[in-house]
Image (cartoon, rainbow, N blue to C red):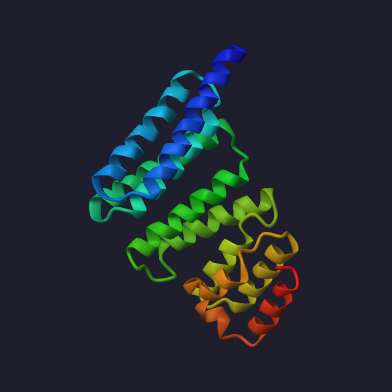
Length: 203
């Protein structure tokens, strides 16, 4: 595969990502149309046998975002398609913490669609992906793991993961953490105000 083919495949992926971003800011049929255009760009890049990993990863992210804007069986199908793309991308690159982390985030949103109990299989599967990502790149999934631990009322585990995220500079803004419904249980803990105060020093 020559350098020009790689160049044009990369352009197609970038174009697909831009279309995906536009789709997330649109609703209804127009959003679905844009998502399909993004998929077409990713598919073209894969057909060129170039930068396959990036295309599959972003395709999975696009499916994830479209699933969040749908409901019922349509959303279910889109979530499942996203998992297929993540799985295929890990065939190309088996040790990608970014893909594993995004796969876990997709599983969490899938669970939210069902208003699932924190012990639901989808949350357990998400935790498995996040832990695998953490093994490869400590900090990348620490905040997501903290959220699951909080939901499951494992407040000690939540504190530990938040501390890791802080040490790795991988926390969202303080305002976002305080508004995060996933951290509701943790926010009632004695250690939470002190932790937030420690974050403000660096925020």
